[in-house]
Amino acid sequence: MSKKLKEEETIEQEDLGVVSPQEDDEFVRVEDLEKFDRKPLDLSQYIGNEVMVVSVELRKGSYGKFLKVTTAPVVKEPIELRASKIYGVTEEGEKFGWVKEGKLDLDLKKYKVGHPKDLVGVKVKIQTRANKEGTEFLTF
View 1 (tube, one colour):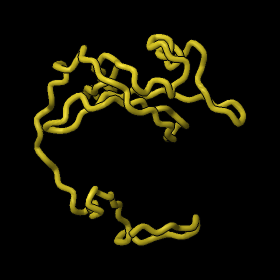
View 2 (view 1 turned 90 degrees about the vertical axis):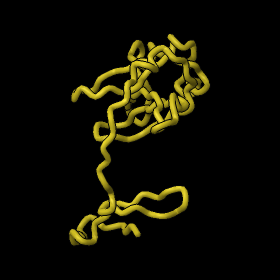
View 3 (view 1 turned 135 degrees about the vertical axis):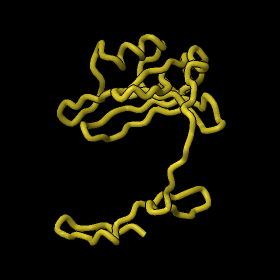
View 4 (view 1 turned 120 degrees about the vertical axis):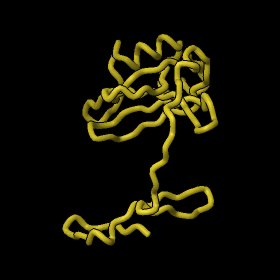
């Protein structure tokens, strides 16, 4: 059970624990997690496939707010894979938005929509991209 703490309160190490609700309302304790041996997936087989955008979410990260745009599953087995793309959000005073001619603005024009919310339902072509560590992921 989670407990909200005041800033000045501390808790002992044995009281720490992250729980994740599952569909059946059971909880998994961090201590019960195990490492699995899984072969890397070949993502190149999905490049060029068309898939629909199903969500545009405004999130808060370590460096500020961002939009996460996610597609329907590209594949469901052995694990569910979705393509996603992250866009930075700019803050000016009390307002949030995107920069003209920035990455988001260019993609909105590419997909012929005027606002990020209108990306839901748009078909995109799958690409792969590697992160700084060299791990490939699906994007569009």
